[in-house]
Image 1 (cartoon, rainbow, N blue to C red):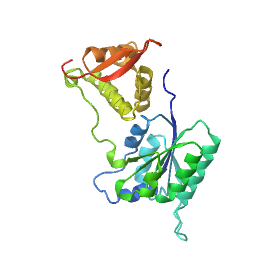
Image 2: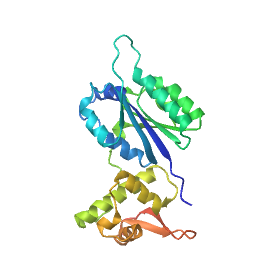
Image 3: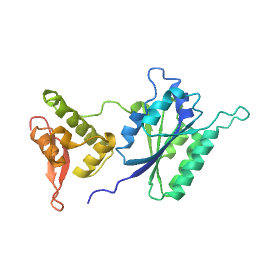
Image 4: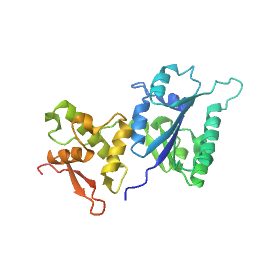
Length: 254
């Protein structure tokens, strides 16, 4: 039987994230890097970001394009407390109680003030993933999460590219690169069995427009068989269901 699919809710404390980026001038925040890692963990069904968006207008388009809901929290000059933090906590707990099918909460922030929220979510049986900048993340928060991802680690070359990929036509190469990226991500998530359906679902979450027929394959199994025939991956057939399972990348010379 295939593993049950995790469902994720992502809450972004954009004010804190922007403060972290002030100390790293080499690049701009890219929400797609965050979401591409998270879809390897399951289906992202809630995406919300909090900020005074008049101060971060240049990020609004990319967040809109990634279907992130933007919650406007105007800056208040009479108090030092961040209203966005409070609103994020209230919304996260409301969702925790209202939507039992959401099993994983992602808090994109490095602020230690979210540690009590993390504890309460875990108390209610939720898995909590934190994500933030190395230089602006509190150890109190990172140690309290079930898992913590540093933004700087996203996009770091981890993908396996088997020899010979560059020699195949571009239209085929694109789908194989997506396949390899997906397999690498699922292996990083320590999935015990890489069912073909799991691989395909993750590929579609990464690229919603993905369809094997657009690349010349009648079924997804045909795509996997071609990848194995070319010496890129190794497959086995599950004796119970008869479906393919991806064993891993083929060893060189085989």
